[in-house]
Length: 285
Image 1 (cartoon, helix red, strand yellow):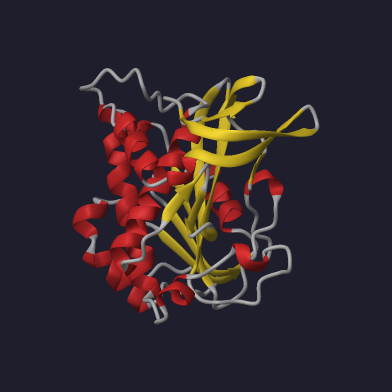
Image 2: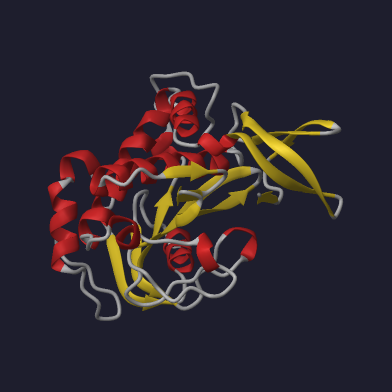
């Protein structure tokens, strides 16, 4: 893989070599990779590239972010040397297979963005398990965790025009090494090296995450989202029977998780009955 330059930053050799080793699995995905030591937000860069016509599978990677963000507009702690911060441009057209009639996944629909978040979660959990041997789990809607401590977060941001999806930028941050986390994170965050007690190869982790994502995305056109949901459920023990609170009309309501539905929405049971949570706030207890 040839090094790609932007503002003078070359793709590190170990990253390029690790991605080249997985060329057969990537099949052109990540053919364009833009690399930064430090950037404001990888999602912002990827969004600008997408707006300029960047291809499906274009990847932006940074070793640090100055304005990283997570779900619900929260800041994402992204210090130098502690993690990998990655954003990928996804377009609807490559997710369509003309040979299959797909009722369960319409890549042009706005709901596809939520589907892609769960698909990315499965891919990242499997990649981290394979690359490191660490038994990670998923927590709805967008976290990879170890014993409920956050290891990786995912943020999908969609661009919609006339009610149809134009592209999605899927961003994820992986905590590689221990860091001085802000007080509000406390014991809720962890890293690969802290859990494993040994160094990890950042290039291999990145390349495996991209290869797994490419493979899982290729399942979608043939109606593979139900299989991805099944795998997501297997990787998410907290999606059933966990104590949570859901925000309704400005108040926190006690509930228990009751799985996910066919669209990937979280199902919860409250004293007043069943609820379906799509993008609302959930507080895990």
